[in-house]
Image (tube, rainbow, N blue to C red; front, side, top):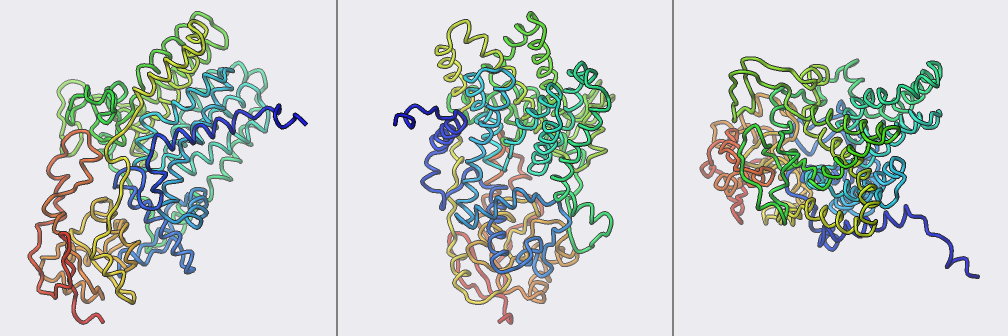
Length: 590
């Protein structure tokens, strides 16, 4: 009768539960406000929550999810040519139906912490054979600055990455078609959920192979051809539903549908890592942030909070150095492991850098974020961009570098624990990691407020279209994404659009500036019934930009030229004014 008391509880579920508890504590009071607040700052989060709302709404009325007639009115936005992250959409569908859009958004973000920690634990346990080290650094990777900050802005979906490298190592070291299939499956899941990390993993596969040539030779070419075919087949099966819309569009183009826009080479300068990104903590670290100087937009430190928070932590670096020292002295499997992950980390750091190193006289254009130089040393990403022009944020390779450093640090911790004792090592390292990795910006939880204008529109019966001003770019969070977010409240169609090319060019040119002659006439002819003018936006500028910058943004970021000047009151009936918002009615649209 004592069996229930003596049965051993599996460590995995217990560890996952602990990580969930740490997540709730770290992000508190979000757990108490799941339906009224969201994790992170306004930006891409606004369009992400709108996406969950649209998934819920469109499926509830039987409308095709990829054909959005509630935006880009009167033309609509068809994104059926864009890659379809079906796994993410399937999970989103379940969560949004169960919890609603805001709570679903929060829960999916919060679960990323324990999931990343758990999968990293299993990888490290295989690598180090030390449960304590694996548990500690599984949590370290899950709550690392990059992962935390990225979750404030996007869905990172990093939890597949450790499984991908786990089964890659098992395939190379143990062999077996099952391991090969699981590697292809996990790599496909990673690429399907986050193409960037799938891409960076693909770049690292040759590095892992080079360190396992002895195993490859031992099993013969025939086996590896078959194992490679199994892994490739599993990868293709998983990734094909994502890629198929783009493949279909290339075979039979649909001029009415949009895909993924090509990127500019200048994006690689904006979204590349700088040396001090890895060595300086975030300005929002509550313990160390006050030590971080404002270096502006120079070549040594990146200026974006989301993409340039790549701090490795000196605790991790010191333990990685200890692992390297011990590995070089010991030789054998330990030496191979250490050199493998040092190579992986350095390669990813190189990939995360700008596309070339300037030699001789050079000039930095801060506004365009480009560098012209007398001579250049091209880095791999310069060539990779020519082949894969849709990949532009190479700084994200820093997350993979952090993962490699985590593997080294966990290895180094095992030696420290032997030297000073496991309990003492755990206490010291855990405390140092908390100090170095804490990210507590004042805007990490957003509590959105609804304008009285939106409430009035929601109460207005029937379906009609509205246009909101300033009319920002397609990817402007402060205008376009915010307007989309509040569409969840009023439920009316919007002229504003998040997709370039979804509005007819001549129509967009006429209506972009509401003060321009012919703008109201064009809106009226299109059947638009109301115009909303946000006076505070014209006065204060883009308030969201400063949240994602660690230095003062330039004026053109705060007051984008495409906004135009604040318009005079149009010669239309003012329906209401509230909190800096003005609602006007275009006559003749009843």
